[in-house]
Image 1 (tube, one colour):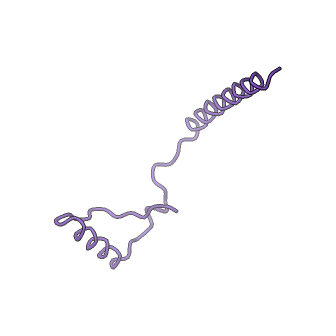
Image 2: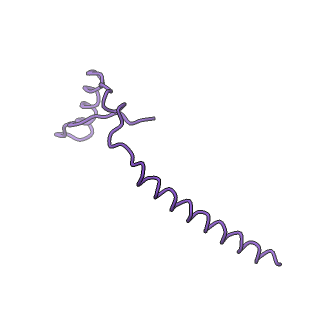
Image 3: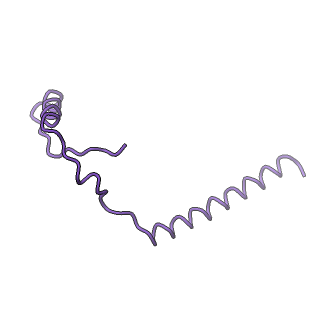
Length: 75
C-alpha cells in the first residue's frame, strides 16, 4: 500500500468520524436544548458611573446617539 492510499483512507475515516460526531451532537442538542438567558447576565447591575462614562463615550464618538441597553458579556 502506498503512502498516498493510506493517507486517503485515513482522511476518509476522519471524515466519517466527524460526520458521526456531528449527528450525535445534533441529537444531543435536540434532547437537551440550551437555556435562553443565562442567570448571571440577569443579576448583573452596571455601576451608574460606568453607565455615565459609556454614554459620554458614545455621545463623543457618535453625536446625537443614545445608549438604550448595556449588558456585560461573559468572560
